Image 1: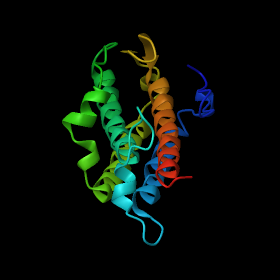
Image 2: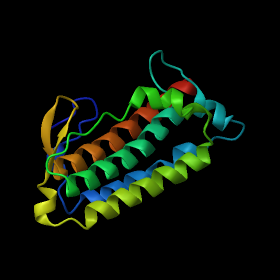
Image 3: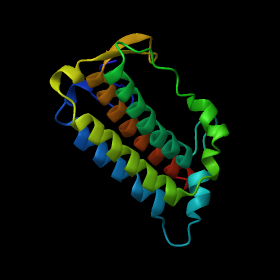
Length: 176
């Protein structure tokens, strides 16, 4: 995957130098939609609503991104100590239920998204050129050998894409 047709993210737009700052910026960008509402709005209710069948709520998207940052940091660390590890699935659908994503406090989720983005950014920031080139076996979108550079690019894409999903979900929940 080099370009996402839905959100227009170009993997090549991110390199070793840009990834840490992009992660930090994206992590902070989750703050506003999880905490700012129009006067009289039931913010937590909007965040927890499922206006589209088969789609997550805005809060569930934010929880997913929080966990993606954490899982990707674990994968990065695994890749630095193992030769070509095979990453296990993160259990994205199971986490929504098992961790009760939709019941979590939005303010805490917003803080955790930013904190996990910062931790991952710091981990990427310290890599040498040789470490960026280390690889692991990633199972999505198809099982393939992926470098840590790709892992960083893919994580930026995930955070960018799901921020758009969160915005669409909030607009739909507001009837727009």
